Length: 237
Image (cartoon, rainbow, N blue to C red; front, side):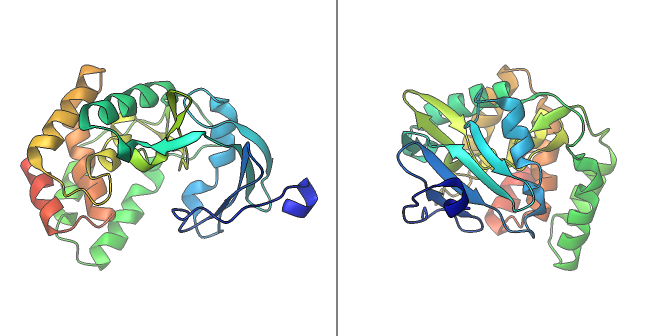
């Protein structure tokens, strides 16, 4: 892709653990996602829809080869370097820009969550029975584009404002996006008091408290919450 697009690549970014992500000159980044990362199938479509409003701008793409040329965020520091209140306020503000009405080609989270819970059950995760019960009680939204992995390390500074990177976009509801923020940044250990303050900030922006709490348990089950996180998640209900 670099040869075809006339790019000079730098060393890959250290946090690009699943995709190939490397600087392409001073102002762009080349990202190539592996086929098994099916949650990223519509990443290019979401970035095109957002068009730089709340997320990095898409400059070019080759959908067949899963290659994206992206705006490079500069200076690029992520939300993990910020204080608790500032990082949470930024996450809320970015989320409000990203959550917007959408339809095809984006897939609905409701067609995937049951399979993810099945896989977690096969791994005997302790939260699965409760997660199934909560999920069965939800009428899952399907009209809002969600980021899918909204957390500190995916919020980058672009000259005094912050934009999101690395979306795993699907159709759902804003509350689905909150849990991944609750157990970050690395190496933060999840605490109930901090979690409650973060939830309150999202609720003040109009999100539903009960739905955020239910999604935290559901997503915690299939994303493999550890024993300490499970204790906190149970404490949310």
